[in-house]
Length: 624
Image (cartoon, rainbow, N blue to C red):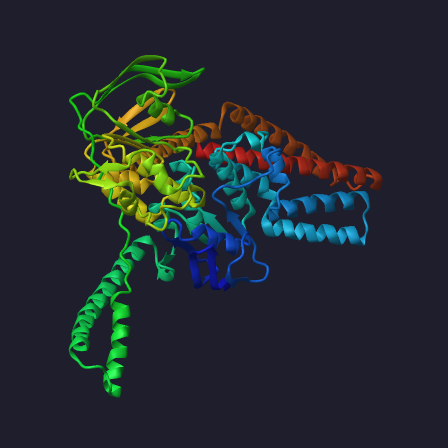
């Protein structure tokens, strides 16, 4: 069943063409990822489909009755509402149905007639369709998964990450027919991502999403749309399949390009040697040469991200933390933390939001003082610190000016000097973009520029706090290549599990209450170990629960009741026999017989109740 058709759409900003002539569709049950480099128009495409923007040309057609849910990168809410008010004043379909049911119930109670009865019946049917009776339970479950617990908190007091999680929770609660998700894993911790991954994978959901999380993408999506050089490529399969097919396509294209190049060279020699074409045959050959030339020169040179900045020399002493304590009131962040960093260490940091990961990084870089303890930094250490917040790039500056404010010339690993402009070229900012104002860059392009300002300072101790947010997959792959070759120390905080697995040797696990555990494993190995421990724990709990339940099946109180019932049943049966004997006397009057008949009926009902309860207890006794 077709849900969505996109026909011949294009989008431009001034002279900058994002895409043009794009066509694709979505069917019921499709789970599609849109992959493209930063600045290619991924977010613009989602906005057009969601009806938040209009295309330059073309049209978007939705099947009648289809409801779209759109998760923006930066959701906008009524800041004066509490979360509770936002929930119950939202346009969520389920909330509207519940409100209509409550209104119809009140109307029918106050003024029952055919109209109110019909309205109430229709509202009840709609409640059944959306399972509105369980709405509160489902609402609490989803909100708790995203750590949204204080429903009386004002929206204006929430951080950007909390707003993104709230928007995602509202979207899932609304259960639209088609989900449009723009970087859904941003601002989620790893447990939230894994829960969302399972939810989207197992639910019968139709979705189109943009994400840089490769594990998430690989496990959720069954179709990849790749936007490259203005063309849209379709890949029926997950991310792993897409990588294979893209390599095959590029390999085949390179072969064709090579053949066209050799043929062009041969034809060019003929044209140079031959007299001016006069015959029809020779004119056709000249025309054909132009076709070959166009093909041979059609491939654009792919912009490569080559991060080969020279690393400052590392001395014998790197970084020592001795008996470091840090608390905020009752919240303990570090409790006597000791560690000596060795050259070339690659550490991933894992922990729930609010346990102090960013505080730890700020203490290491000495932008925050500990309550007590010593931080000894080697004299040769040069930090490169990529923070979640980033630096405040001045929007009225051009891209090249941002770099020139730091340095006009950068020394590369081979001691060659390159200009800021050349480095920008390496970093996928071609010459036509270097004089673009920062305000015109996409979110991912700004993050890429900020990353460059960190790396160009020749650090030998890199700290990257959520560096993958808003970066495209090409940038991530190239950043990984650089970091794998980086010889200095690396501390990485990231919810990107693929990124963590590839780049870290061991993990600092922030357990909370000042406890940090050093785990020598990859992130996936650590999660597998945790899941195994969790299953064992649940198994133990079940054994204990079963034993307790079994022990409680026939408690002391049950035994007392069981014995008491036996005595009561015996007494009632005697009374019943006496009454039955009474009915055998033919001299008893009709009125007395009728009265005693009622008493016998009451006695039989009481005896049945006692017998049923005795049998329940007897069954428990046999199980115990």
